[in-house]
Length: 461
Figure (cartoon, rainbow, N blue to C red):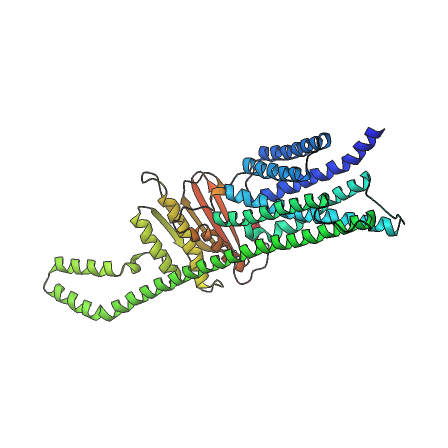
């Protein structure tokens, strides 16, 4: 009979923990790649590890601090082994999940225990209450429920910008302090369980000692959560500012291209009269060879007018012209069919950010291929159903989609910034960005509604 009661007590905990494992897996899958088979393996491994650690802890006395750290190491190790992606990014995702759930769960444990003791003392008129097995089971189950809610309704939303295309060094900067806070929290819990951190008084009684201890842990956990949230948001804010700086410099580059183009046009216009006089003289003297050399020299000096990419937008023409020259110098096949509507709600510099970053990424990907491999860039833009559609395809050596966000640029500050800038522009106009990788070809599509078109734009993909 006693074994049946123990099983009935454990069953709700097992059920809640399974839900917690599913929430953990879903959170990690949101930011990391995971195959279907590895998903099942991950859940099974985490559950089996939890069961084994619980059984060992019941058979042999193991200090709380050892159990806590072992659980963290086991979870982070499973994420690093079974999920796909950069090691640093996997470490940061696992660290954020461990930090938030550990602190939030610890806070709820103490708060809920304190609340139950208070109700038992006041409503039940029990002078020195303590939690029995059923009440401990209730606290544990409620903790898992709270952690599931936090994962699904809070962390999965406001952490998107933290993990999206994160630079390697930022992943490390996020992971290290969070893990340190978790370790300090585990040490504090161990100290509280042994009466080291909270010693209210020998004459206060069991009830007040428990309440005081739980209240102290609540305060410590709350402060730790504030530190973690401040750390995550602070680091993310610095990173976003760096992104904005990169976008600003890309716009400055567009200004310089436009200024150079304008200067060339002004010089050509100023010298045109002299050119006509010179050419007329060569024509009258029938000096055809010299006339041909003269015309060739003029053509070389005004290359911008022979790019052949007339989009209807001067700024975009300048960007396309420059990128086409770069592609030609590197023997990259260039295919371009771009039409910018005259009345376009998209700011011309935002257009240049889109085209510039997309083409920079495409050029970089093509450069990484061997000279003997087919290297191409295809970019198209047009209006479809009151939406501006920009699509670009290029050859690449990437094999897995999760590798898309990483580049090999020498300037580490620009690492992964391109796709972020593209997404920022699309989001600012209520548009969407989609990336695809198929058989050595990388494709990016940007769809932006024109004239404030209102409908679910994501259905257009």
